[in-house]
Image 1 (cartoon, rainbow, N blue to C red):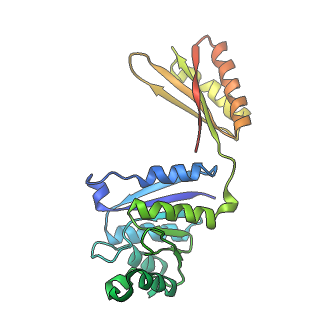
Image 2 (tube, helix red, strand yellow):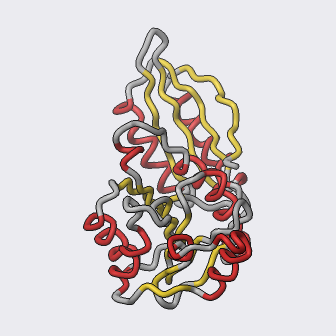
Image 3 (spheres, rainbow, N blue to C red):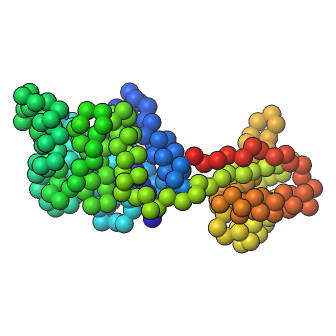
Length: 250
């Protein structure tokens, strides 16, 4: 199954804050042998958010949405999710229970509003302050605060999708000197044909000591065979190369 992320907030797109959700999602998936297929950044603009969520809800990808589920005027995600799904917002009984347990006699309508989700949603526990996130169909909604969002992301992956976890892949490569990418294209195509389950990459570095980082990503056994294929091909073409350290994608 494919995974995507939606990251919402004016503060990210204006540069006031640097996004860290993207890297966290990539790493969390990689630890389980999975990978992110796409990511979208959005302003706090209801029309944009609703349109993006409508596309997500109409597809089959598993989507993680970060930000905008609070109760302040610039938080639109809950309302947009309901609009995108064509349903009403409703106070979720489990969310109400968590919010009342968190605030006791200081519960207010604004605080309870944080527990209103698109009808048919389920909650995502928040170990930080007990204000839940929520899942609506194939989209999982987290707050923008990393201290809250990241443990909730881990909970979703471990609780909802443990069956999707695979053995983590590895990333292996050599550094090729004195070659242009165009001179290695036939070798790359031959590698792809011979090892269709490994993902080939070619990353040139321009500088005082230019080189091409040529390698593959995939299951350890297949990746190592594919890299040996590339090493042999580079050697036959007469280019010098040296190994690059193996990266475990976790």
